[in-house]
Length: 348
View 1 (cartoon, rainbow, N blue to C red):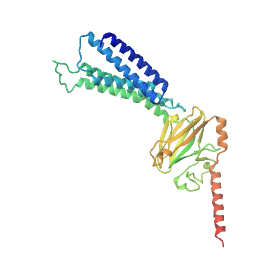
View 2: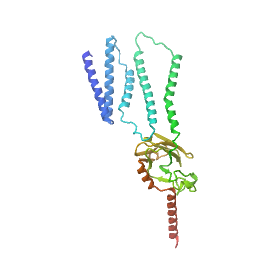
View 3: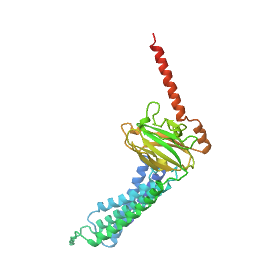
View 4: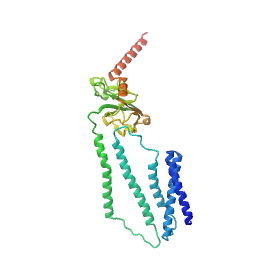
């Protein structure tokens, strides 16, 4: 290829790569996103080959065939970076105080991504630099203790630096603030139930031996602290904005995991144990509750909602809810009424 033709082709492919980049960034997702990304990568690779050919020509080198392995390694590195920058998928905006989780993940993502790209580019360099040449003979050196020591120390320091921030975040995660309000989430195939403290500000005790048709959450009927507890079954859990809550979790049957992606926190629910997490909702809205544990054939349907309200809206919602005592009384009345009706129908 003549020098002028090479310049023309390089210019065209450079413009094509820019056009592909623009198309990918504007499309956001879908087929045009992928077309733009492929055009961008193809243009970058062609330009790279033209530049390399120009260098070879200036040094009087003539290559027998293109090095496809090096091209693929560079393409994967560039494609990874481009996909990260122009990816249409990213996290939902955070809705709690756990920005630390995002920061930790970003730091981990940055470190591992940089190492990934550096290793790929180094491999591509080695493939080109040490490819076979007539008259050269490769040396066999199976071990290098010096190199192994350097890599071991660097890897140890990098992994420790990557994990250390997570330990500080975990220390905060397991120490809820003293003013946090305790609420309870109960998981059962395949629905969520909730319990909030009543006027006394504390939850009553519970035990599986109290579970029955009139008391599905197993609240202790003899505990006076549990009589005014707010029970929510089949509805959404409401939380007040900017108020820390400690979420106690129980499972009645199998393993579940309470997960709200926007809260950036989740915890497994183990039968026979009470686990917990805490958070402070940082913005209002309705967020989906998922089960992050494979809990059975209808696991995917185990969904609910958490609504974060302003203080006035939260108090108004709270006033509309039923207490455990009210629900238990209604269940007794219904049972007596049903029994009386059955006895009346049984008389001749």
